[in-house]
Length: 331
Ligand SMILES: Nc1ncnc2c1ncn2[C@@H]1O[C@H](COP(=O)(O)OP(=O)(O)OP(=O)(O)O)[C@@H](O)[C@H]1O
Ligand SMILES: [Mg+2]
Image (cartoon, rainbow, N blue to C red; front, side, top):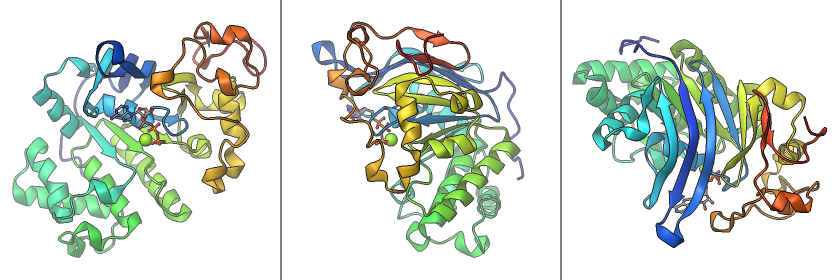
């Protein structure tokens, strides 16, 4: 791919430390994300996994500075290539978002503007944040469409989103996310709506572009088998907190948290998503109901009374987990 925007200097990658996200004020305030720490190096992929409602999209929104109304970063630090994003003014953050962070959303149709052509949607941010003139932006849009594998790209440039199939729209979304050559790409369930063949093509495409551009990638999914295939490191979220994280190889060799193990056991049944986690009874708590103890305790096969008293201490090194009764015994 032609690197139209010159590479930027600085330490590479994303560092997140003790991130917290809250909604509401005073006595009605509640946390949806609590004490999240992780890093993703340039060229690396972090797989972010967890059940529906665990806080995956909220984490992405916090990193982008795009929390829903009423939400705010209540604690912690987010550094992208050495720049602290939580301290930036709104316009500075908008510029970082436009230029340094690309986002692929779960539903490409609702994320594309139905009244703008594909050329307009890809080229506009490039004019705005890449400083290109109209013709250069159009040429860049065409290059990108070809790069992401849209057939007959020159003719399709002036089509509207509804004229594209689901898989092709997702390719357009990827082109849009990459238009300014971001350092960080966040892919939130990028293939959930697609058939398995298209899914595999899209994930291969993201991987190839990541290697070419040296991007840090956060790959959000509920599917651990995709994480095993595509991620260098893993973070398992449960009810707004990380329960286990570390290098993918160590995690998949010996998952330590009972929740991670339950997720892994659920993999063969993912062909029928409504059956997933059927071997764990119950549902995750809502943020307003988070307790001071382990949040997985009410569903955990290894629970003891002490699990309810305080949040478990961190155990382990690069591969670590928060559990008093880990699979395989304590360290
Ligand atoms: N606008 C909002 N105000 C308050 N709480 C919210 C808001 N949007 C989401 N939440 C809560 O934040 C928590 C995390 O939601 P989030 O969307 O990050 O989950 P997720 O892991 O992405 O789930 P899914 O797999 O379904 O996409 C949920 O408990 C949700 O109810
Ligand atoms: Mg989500």
